[in-house]
Length: 290
Image (cartoon, rainbow, N blue to C red):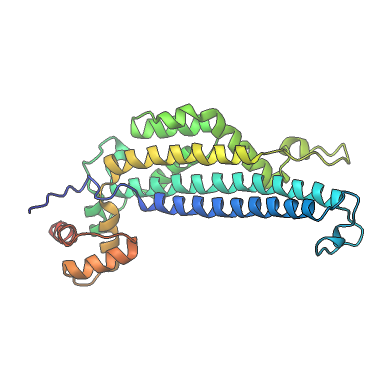
């Protein structure tokens, strides 16, 4: 049976940056659920053993303090859980922004004509083979516009770059801006307001921003929705099968190209998903004929 492949139409639905993001998301969720389970179990056991809030904590479990009561431990544990939630949001935001920067770099390499309003007019695979790249200053400018500043300005830059309005970004602009502010407060002011924390006129420590587990889950859902929409659109319109060509180019730079079976085994092992021999043969021939 004959197979017809298109350089601009991907044979796989997800980009590799998206797959990395999803692995980070799964890792973060596992860590969050492990803390949740440990918390539920600890409080359950304290209840079953008849622990009182005035009891010394060391009478029920190992602790490095001989004076901390169960009530004091509980208050500190709740504060730690909140701190963990705040850092989950920081990590989510960081992974999300890393995904955006990574997928944009992939788009610029795959479809360099996009920068000058001539999408698909320049094949990034040919540029890759010839060793010619677009001016790094231009791509960095777009990366900064799409990943720095308020989310209103970022969304405007992304929509302008692609000539397309991403519904998930527009629908969640307000929530993404709140997430950006939380991330900055966690990273620079221990979960407090940056501006208020820099007030030198008071010796009082500000209260930490409160974030619930439900809020963490909400942002997991929002970011996942945005990543999915971005990835689908960019794969279908600007990336296509560029990732597989990029792998072939880097693997065999300056060497004789492999046969399809060798390349299939290598690509399958690298991407952790199965490719057909027909597809791998097409990739090799397309690249060789450029």
